[in-house]
Image 1 (cartoon, rainbow, N blue to C red):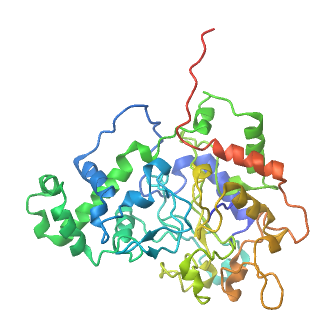
Image 2 (image 1 turned 60 degrees about the vertical axis):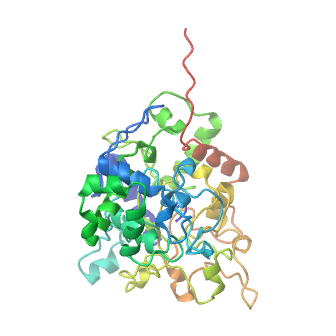
Image 3 (image 1 turned 90 degrees about the horizontal axis):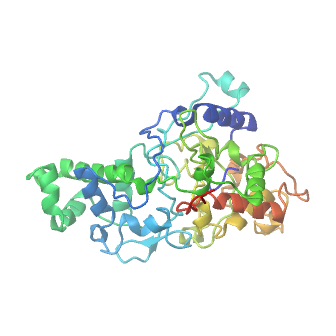
Length: 424
């Protein structure tokens, strides 16, 4: 399941899944790798000085042009550091009336284990034509354009649809007026604001340290984590859902959303950080889509520009982690679906019943993959199961199967309460 985000074939996906299962957290060049440390109930995190400041900034709405939006406004801790609502994209800007263009992804679990952006390709053209291409992988964001957390953290500060600051000087002016400005000087030097470039870099590094040090970003407290540790059993329905999830000739979800423990004991993140094109239907809830010439093409732009020269990148978005996905109310990069089961239905019925998901064009024909320009729809994955089906065929999952898979995915929700063992 390339859920919520191809170009690479099932053979490549199988190789990736097998390699990931064998090597666990060490299988890619991670920007920052940390083995999972389960959260201890009631324990207070111990922060470095920089991380403590970063936490204050993460929750500080005064750092926005509107004075009403913080990092936590979109990445809510009580919603697994994802969106606190079911809006396709959040509203921000100077007056909080501007809508973004993408759904907000969760920050939980991936920040300390995301690999650097890369796209390994064969050295010669003949090899590229004869060998299966590898999928791009890594980086932060739907299009992987940031390799460092401090760079990713700066983007919302200046995005006109989000915190909408004019430039770093505007952010620093707000920081100098913040209640914690004196503490900022104590940590980074009394004259830190005299060097504006250094002051801004330290501020972004502080947010990065908070995101890496706070255990709430990676608690590993789901039922599935406790199942892996032998502390609880899954129900019959949850086990059926896992089997459907793992089946390479069925849902084939685990080929990208890996659910095996690494050899170092690390619990799975349910993503391989690869990029795919799923052909998700265009979402009329996004204001940007009112322009028929506007297309969000992921790696190909408009936000990322360095990969636009390779048209085979157009329409590819990163596979996100499925942890806590059952708590979400918005799915895929464009927020097209608002329930987990509808997202699952689309995934297995996209090709068997396309008229259910896509509109008809002026000639009465189903306009399949309508959120990409016609010339680029060839990039959409039609080679990996279950995206190989034809109209009128039976989907690989029944409604009962969808219920079972949804039940399994719900075991990935954090804050599962373990029942104390009864004395014998």
